[in-house]
Length: 224
Image (cartoon, rainbow, N blue to C red):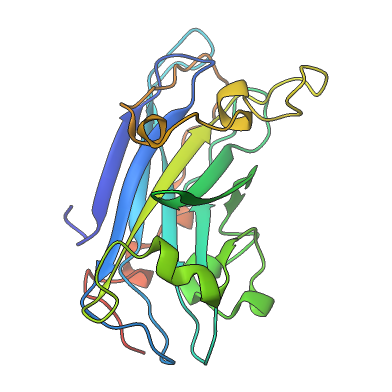
């Protein structure tokens, strides 16, 4: 896009379905003791106008993947909401991050935090200094998720799932939507076509004050 970020866009059309975004983080750098911070990526969910919302809006999320500086540091993935917009029930959006390759997968689901609650996608600190929820891959397991030749570079596939309708706690899956709580039967299910969300919500119009692209990467991988 105009700010140098790769943007994945989905449209929320069906209230009870979960939206999928498949992202790839890659670099020609070999993983070593240095800090590794590939370019962040944005996911934009378009919420059309509905009976509960007079105008269409877009909810923007940022996904960051990085490895802190130091020996044997884990691989970290964080998801944050950049523009304010409540979900259908007036609370937070939900999100799941899945890092996967072949037989190996690691998943983490939680309410999505906004930039007032955490600056993890900005600072990308060590795990102990993070303020929000994280998907963490131990150093010994990173090689199993790297789709590139480890002597040449790195490439990681991340599946992001977003929803704005929390389930009832007594439905057998806790508060997670059923298609998030149930583990896919095979790898093909991870890479299926997008199932998009519909708006019947009372989402507030997004505010630009929490989304300052000048604070994000300009598109180049950083070696700081």
